[in-house]
Image (cartoon, rainbow, N blue to C red):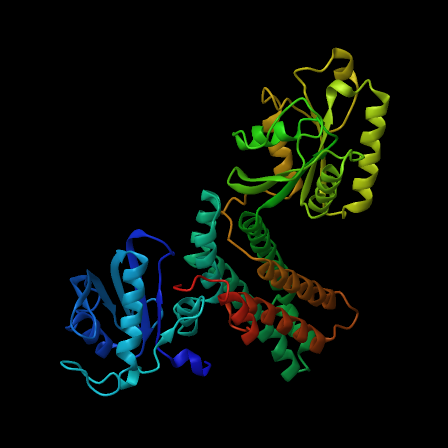
Length: 474
């Protein structure tokens, strides 16, 4: 631990603004003197006590609930005091100031024990309470991150996934992989100590079979984590196409609300309109953009430029076509030009779905033309469900039977690294003369990458980056 990890800390643990209840949280070693200063008497562990919170002169700041959690049976693993007061900003700031003032005092205050051992009490940094829970082995790093993900969840499915990871399911799966990997390493390392037994020993121990089973387990965990990453990050979907193709109508239809202005006048949308929606619990950040054409004025030109910026950063692009214009050669040529530009500007990982709109108004001749994509009517809702399903499919959403883990990009990167190391290790078994020292190193590197997920092996700068994203009082 760093020196700052030994300081007692305090913070307002509820969101800014007015509310029915606000919480001030303190964590540190031996905080009994502070309890006496604020509450005027000792508190029974883990028992809610209703009492007045007093300032240095003994005047009542507020009446509220106090709960004392002695170490190690607390959220942080240290002594923790929670003061639950009325949720006014001024009240909470007064309580916070009182805590800092009391511990800044030297020597005994009337009716209190000495507070000198708590004189270092300071405002907590973002995520520092949860960081201390990690440092005191109350939770591992994956669980700590899941707490922040649960708070930030934008859909019910994302919240359930985060709760699953917070309860330890992701960590259990990773630790099972670690257990199998360590056992395999033990077998390989034994051959390095006793080289006369080398390959025959590994064959008798079914080392290759153990490695294959480990790879299968890893694939299952990686699939579930990949789905969890989609739930956490969401999918950026940009609606693009010529003016008056029905982009704003499609946004409104997907969102189920009138978010964008819709008129028969081409070029109505001059700037992007964004909305967070969900499909089967997967959050989608849908962006309606200005129609793609030669701009008629400076304002529209800026809108078109911004549209291309949004398109280039999309996970998926809904390229909207107007079915009522499919007999217009000029319109078709402009669509083709947009398609060529999309192909040049977008990466191979960006999905493009051709969406043919205005099914309700299209002529029979226009519908007879063979075309790839999804036929819809943003006006009537026809074809929207098929579009939703195709959209989930192209971005890789597939619910795992066992449920998904809330996961981050760093988790996926670590699992991919483990996959690569195990593949390299497996190749050694097919070599004419396996290099057992290289095999052992591959397995060691795989273990290090797995350890990064739960924090068994984590650089200090990585920890700082992770916990800095948390709320101040968490």
